[in-house]
Amino acid sequence: MNDRPVRPQRLLILGGTGFVGSHLVPRLAADDHAITLLSRNRERHRDLAVLPRVRILNADPYDRATLTAHLRDADAAINLVGILNETGGARFRRAHVDLTATLVAACREAGVGRLHQMSSLRAGEGRSQYLITRGEAEAVVRASGLAWTIHRPSVIFGPGDGLVSRFAALLRIAPVLPLARPQARLAPVAVADVSEAIARAVADRATTGRAFELYGPETLTLIEIVRAVRDAMGLHRLILPLPDALGRVQARLGEFLPGKPISRDNFLSLLLDSVGREDGLAALGIRARPFLPALPALLHDHGRQARYDAARARAGR
Ligand SMILES: NC(=O)c1ccc[n+]([C@@H]2O[C@H](COP(=O)([O-])OP(=O)(O)OC[C@H]3O[C@@H](n4cnc5c(N)ncnc54)[C@H](OP(=O)(O)O)[C@@H]3O)[C@@H](O)[C@H]2O)c1
Image (cartoon, rainbow, N blue to C red):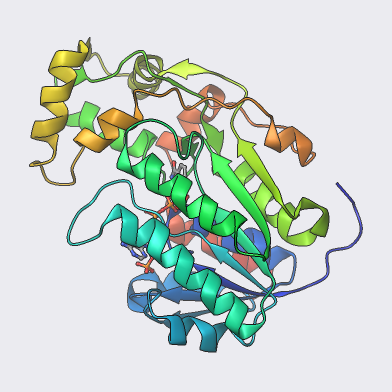
């Protein structure tokens, strides 16, 4: 990958107010890009707007005319929208496939030729609707005629993640933690590395037409990950590996619990190992950070606002 100075661009980001966006946006802002985030509820994410050259606008990401209007001022679009569960009216097909197709149509109409699409390792494989619809969205992007780049991460860790924080919360309250798919293999990737990968793809046209598998240097089973979280918290909790028959029951019951700690679709996606074959981080010149040494700091994360305050201080605002 080239090491020429980065040419600042006008970037339009969908889904940029969540966990990945909260790390990616400061990283892109550091390259002096002008960033517009479209959100369904900007009031909930005002913290991001303190960053230099970043603005958040309220917009319906499913409305083609709205997207086209915002894209007229952009050089490239980044699509980070994704859901892990169907809750509160959100549907996999709508959030992954329909939204991507609408974005592609809007890019073409507005004359924006560059699209960065967030996907997932194993997209298009297996029986989970999450992965199936991710694969369909990738197909839409590949057939778009745009200059696209696709990012396919394994599970992502970092401050504010849904991996460590979710298991830490469960371990805090449950004396015994029954665990479905304990032997599923994952290669957790740092959110800082994912952000760096996307920032490099934005800066380098040579990444056009390529899909990057983003995964960390350790391959761990799910139970190894949960045990590591438990040990780093200094807790004595029993983690009970469930055979698949009981794991399926737990996944069904999990759909009725607040926050859906596990669903049947999550169970189906865990039937596939989230492990890559082609090291996309290395291809982008990034040395992947390991997960296990990062755990103690993650468990003492001071939160999103503290990170923005630090980024703002670095930018002299
Ligand atoms: N986190 C991981 O471990 C991981 C692993 C592999 C792939 N990914 C993918 O990486 C992307 C970013 O992940 P993330 O963890 O940052 O996601 P996130 O925090 O859950 O959500 C990202 C943003 O998407 C928007 N959004 C959520 N549901 C939506 C819906 N139904 N329709 C339209 N917009 C919706 C929200 O923005 P507003 O509320 O502001 O509209 C939200 O802030 C996703 O595509 C995800 O699937 C994540």
